Length: 109
Image (tube, rainbow, N blue to C red):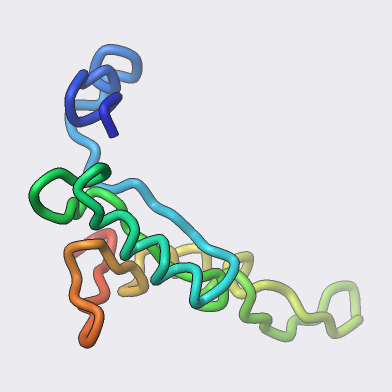
């Protein structure tokens, strides 16, 4: 986070003025919340939880299969191959969100 927040090297190295989110996809659903809660720690976020890190589990869009015929054979393919725009859906949670009622966010709202 020091690279972006404190040193602002992303602007110098990549010409990016503002980083809205760092997307983190977790393989396990439970681990997603563990990572999100860990990102609240003052060592990571300072005095208040950072909304910079956005978390989602793989099961939301990366592992859910859809059936498609490929060369006449019906196969299961990951839904993200069929609908890559799902990455923009309301599937992301930040450390600033509460644990009881998580306010899922979209990358384009």
